[in-house]
Length: 353
Image 1: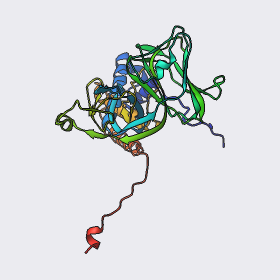
Image 2 (image 1 turned 90 degrees about the vertical axis):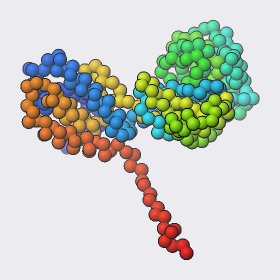
Image 3 (image 1 turned 120 degrees about the horizontal axis):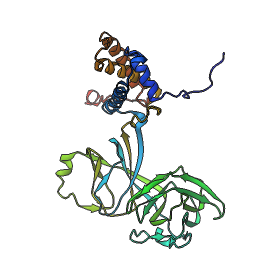
Image 4 (image 1 turned 90 degrees about the horizontal axis):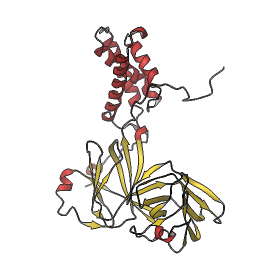
């Protein structure tokens, strides 16, 4: 039997989804105007928005790392964050008792002195900042705090001898704000003695601090509601370990208020969040949804268009409603990780005397 031999390679564009939706709505291709196509595309966007209310879409769960800054109480979450599922306070061991190196113009020691008021400011493009340990170490997270707001395209590399380097992480071009941390986790690499961060996009490094973190230690943080937070006796109390947070659902960009307020610059908050599904985009783009949702999506858009087009056949509504509900239920049943659930009855009151 001849088969394709591939999985998930069929490309279904926004235009294809809309085309099938309009056909099911009984709108022939000859009657599809620019306005109808625009309305279908907007209804597709509306449907993706409602998915945020349907529970946890497991493909939108992302791990994010935020670095604490001493005295900073409020932290912006990434745009599109819907919910925080879990948050951890994390410490790492910082570089010490080694030697720092830098390319031209930079004072490498400033990037590892645990003082965010000093900086390694280089004078040439595509430079590097490296650190040599006296013994081989295994790095699990890396981070950088820029001295200016600048776009960097960074490569994180390791070496046994300081000559031959192996890339352990490549980060795409992004903006690194002044006085804010950008962290990345890496798969535990084999132990090496040299690690460095290197600019590869044509920028000049101007960096307050670099972290090559080892030995991560995490502690769960407790979530507060608004009443919990506003009833605190002293919301500005500071200490190193952060124990609680309040997630604020702001209109444009959610934020987190920490308690206590951190008084140390080198710890991290690791959290798992759900985010909005990506925007519809152009007609040639694809929708950021698993294939199991395509049938529900097509039926739902068809149903909405039948109710919007003036001369549509309203007799299609109950048929499309049934198809959309059935497809949505089938897809939603798979929005779980299928981990086992163990229930242990408390029979103590019935067995003790």
